[in-house]
Each structure stands twice: as structure tokens, then as C-alpha cells.
Image 1: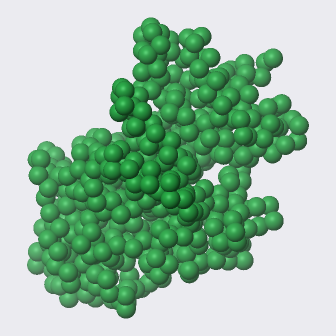
Image 2: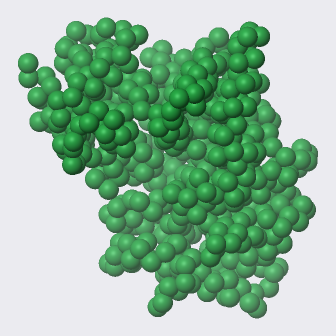
Image 3: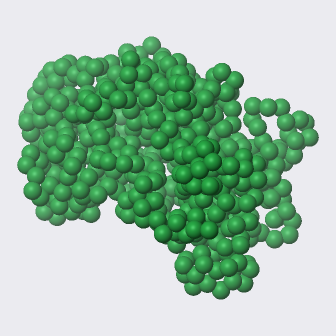
Length: 590
């Protein structure tokens, strides 16, 4: 990879990194059972045609254009086309409500909307039915009586290329690149303003600090939502390295796509890794005899592993055998070529870090926010501590405030919240962005996140409790899918738990417990005893005042549709507390 490249705008990546290599699979997606590949030349030509078509439509610098779609080549092609003419992309989650779409369209003064499919087209039409200012809605799928995105491409015909060059020259590093609305856990979505400089600085910091190191011949699988800056910045980093980007068909086909693409890297969130691990363990329970014994021998061995510490010759000998007999199958399931997996957006359980590293599948945990473009810190393959989120990027400053809050300063910190100067002034003070996260430095250099500042609560005994730490501990059990810890002003913490129903159903079958529904399962006396025992064991090494003493099992997952989760799957605590007020009161009734 060339290191002496000048990149002033994000779209410069096309001309400095993508086009010179002339790869045949810069981008790729599955269509009708086959992988359709886009060469470097094709990508640049399509991006330029989108830019010219938008110019012909009348789009001006700083105009806002929304993209609402699953991951696919058109997403990045259209977004880069928007960038080149100085317009601003407004990416949105396909899963948010019609009311949120309407609010964002109005707040951002969106002019055009690109959607992926018919279901989203219907939602957007409903959201824009009585709005002024929306000039066009375009689809990536071919849909009858809908304007296809090729309409914009065809508009480019006859528009002078010099027109595009003039527009590109008008875009500076300080210009607004994207407006990302974060829903947060309370209130209306707020638009995070990120400039070309913000994103480029983050890319440069990641590469300069060697937080991600790849080769031009590598492949990446993309499946986390591109509307989130986490995946989008990763894609830009992949482009910087010249890595080929393959888009998974859907979240359900990731397993098959991994085997087909055989990627060297992908980004994920801890919950997906938890699900992979739980499925592996469930299959282990189905084994018999020597195979079952070998499986759990390898598993227990892996849970002791620390890649940064010498484990001794006897342990290393056993691990080498475990990798050959057991863990090699894990690597094959991921395609067989994984150099590392990037994990972010939530805390990674230390046991997952240990077991995947032991299996020869390194996980690089990182930390950041939309407001920081996003990466603040990330583990290094050769230098990290389990339970920490790595070292800070070289072009970013981090300090811990007196109350433990993590403060950040640097070129990747957002320009501010759109149309909300008061809110911007609250979070950026004297150049320092207040993350709202509580943390500390281990050994003076490894950043560790302990909780969210606004989510900590105090018991009636005056002790502060960090719920996220307890929730992550509870979710270490293969029988617990979701957890929310409560206890503000109460004698002790308690929790609402959503079981991992597949694991629970399998446990019920093994113990001859006849149940016909989730509701029957969570009210069965033996199941309740099981969960009391699971929680008690998990709380053994937790301080007494922090221990979860009572739990209530719930029959359904917290969801985005029900308003209980944000699009990034964070708990909306107030809404959940309100919805399950009776269950919570019952736990504290005696």
C-alpha cells in the first residue's frame, strides 16, 4: 500500500487507491445465485455518472440526499457520487419508524431519497405524503411504477465532464460530508455533522497507528449497516488499502457468504459473536463420547487463554492440538482466511476474546461514537489487554474527567449537531467532546470502558452500580439473550432477562420438561430454579452490593419496533422500565 498519498476529500480514495489498482472485484454482491463483481473502472464510471446526473437534476452544494438501504454496491456508489458534487448524504436505518423518517426528512430538508426495495419505498412514500421539498424517490431494486436509480445515471448523458471537475474542485476538506441522525436512548434523533476532514483524519489515525493492517489482495465481507459510521469508515479504510469489498446478501446468509467469499476481515458487533459462540457450544452439547469430551476440553482450554501472556510449554502444546482437532473447524466456518475480526459498538465479553484468540481467530475490539467518526481507540494485534478497548489513535487526545467521564479532542470530532448549537455546546467544551462514557486507563495506555455516565444508579444504601457491567456479565450465559439491570433507590439490583429460547428449549427437552410456548417455559418452576442458579453463579465474584438478587423472565425480545431498542441495539431504559413497571414492582414488593 502506498503511504505517501494525499487525500483531501473522501472521494479522492477512488482516484488515489481504487482506480490505480484496476481490480476486477472492488465491490461485489450476490445476484441470482452468482457474485456480481464491479471493477475499479466500473465503480468510478458509475460514481461519476451519478454525480453528473445529480448535477443535471439541479442538486447544489450542501443539498441533502437520503439513502435508506441494505448493504449493496449501489449504496456506496450513490454516496460517493453525492460527495463529489459537494452535496450531503443523510443515511438512515431501514428499521426506524415512519415518524422518525418524517422528522429527519423535514429537519435535514432532504431533496432526494434513494431506497433499496419495495417495502422501504412504501414506508418513505407514507412518510413524505404531506411533506414539501422532496423532489424524487429512487429505488435500487427494479419496481413497477417507481423511479429506478438508473434514471439519475441516464441523466448524465450529454453533461460535460468538465462540469463535474469544477464541482469537485469546490469541495474542500472542511466541507460537510454526511449528516447522521443518532436516535439515542431518549428524545428526538439528532443530526451529527461529519466533514471530509473528520473521516479522513479517522482513516489516517487508524492506518498510522496500525490499528488495521491489510494487503491489496485481501477481501472483506460487509454486513453491518452502512448507514452507521462504524461500517462506513471501515469501508473507506478497506478502499484505502485496496481491499475488495463483498456485501453479504442478508444477516441470515452471513454463514454461507463467509464460506463463499473466504474474507480476510470483517467488522461485527459482540452480539453476533455471542450468537456464533452459543451455537457452537449448543452443537458441542449434542456430541457424545470422546468427541464431546474433546470439544469441552478445547473450550475450557481456550477460556484460559491470554495472547499477551506466556502460557507455558504444556499449555501451548495442548492448544496446538486443540486448534488442529477442534478450532480448525471454527476457522473453516469463517472461510479459512480470517486475519482478524473488528468488533465495536458494544462491550465484548472477555471470554469471547479469549476463546476466539485461542481458536486462532483474533478479535480486535475498538471504541468510538458517531460523533468521533467513529474510532477513538482500538486494540493492536501485537499489543492489547483483554477487557480493554485498545490504545488511542495517534492523532486523538483522550483524558478522564474527575467524575470518570471520557473526554476526546482531535480532528475526527464532529463539527456539531445540526441546527442544535445549544446541544453542541453542552457536549463540546473547550474543544473537548464529552462522550458520556465512564472509563479509565489500564497501565496508563489501555482504555477501559466501565459504563455510561447517565445509566449508573445509586441503591438505597448509597452505593453506585454500573448496570452495563452486570448486564454483560449476565449475557455470558448461553441461556440469556438480553438483560437490563435496575435498582435506582432500591435495596439491591434486580434484572429483567430475556432467555435465549433456543438454548432454553433444548435444555427443557433434555430434562423432559414439556412446554408448548415461551410463556410456559418462563413460568415453569424448574426453569425459574435454573435461572436463579445461573444468575447466582454469575454473581459469585461481584461485590455484594452490586449483585443481582432477583430476576424476572420475559417471553419476548426487546426490539426496535417496540421502541425498546435504538437502531444500534442499545436499551431504551426509560421505555423498558415504564413498560414492565408491574414486573419490577413485584421484585421489590417483599
